[in-house]
Length: 370
Image 1 (cartoon, one colour):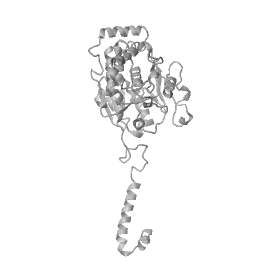
Image 2 (cartoon, rainbow, N blue to C red; image 1 turned 135 degrees about the vertical axis):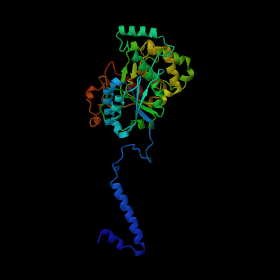
Image 3 (cartoon, helix red, strand yellow; image 1 turned 180 degrees about the vertical axis):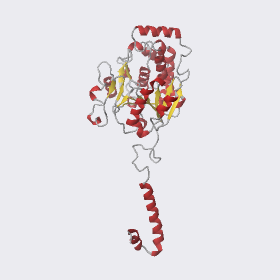
Image 4 (cartoon, one colour; image 1 turned 90 degrees about the vertical axis):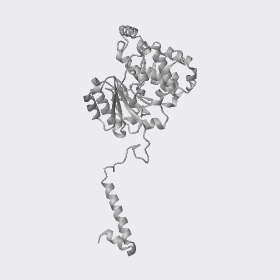
């Protein structure tokens, strides 16, 4: 006799039918679970309706068709180190139409949703108040002085777009957070937690990996223009935290008289979109835009974002992603703590954080701890 038959033998006859039904159903459910393709344990913050509160977040990528191989390299790395576990969507943006080849060869790299958008002339072009003849003369002058990207017209359009328009593109309307990606960068560490959920749950608004000093010949009037804005719009400034509570001392070392050149390197940003969508930032950006500095000089989105965030956010709303190893154009942030060695494949000796004369991380660390 089977074990099942023996167990039924101890049950009163009038209850055996119900016991048989209950046992059969239990065995059926157990069998179905054993052969279910979902029997693996879910990753942290898995998308199960009972425990998961989704974060409306995406990767945002400004890229050209000619940079296909570079962005494929980036996506392969971000999928391997992070997104294969969390499946956040990608938003690709371009000042031209994406080719079929670009779409096919990027879409195949991920199982996450992907979307592709073209920028309009408002986002990528000269506004009506810019004197294009004078702008061209200024580019020639900067080029003659050896200023990086001094002669580049498209670089200026890019900096203006990243400063004031990427977050307004319709493809980002459904998102609250973004992670900016660029072609030909490196990611060196496994990331086993949801960085977007970390940002949201801890009220972080701006995350970075590297800080840099700006080439000051590109922004000779930026700081004074910000000071003019603050003087003309005290009703905006009153909404901002105090100097003590903000990170303003990260971008000025003489109590606001001049810009010290420090900025967060914005080719890597994990941030809240409501920072840039806020009325305060939009008013500041519009003031900067109408001054002409994006075209008559060569204002970068990194100092613009950094100065604005440093003044508008509290210190505790910034986050240094020390655990994300990252390389851009030969500069690397590599976690130096031994606890990261099993998760990272970079050499700690290449870490840029304390590079004298170039990195502003020591300034950030001092201000954040003060």
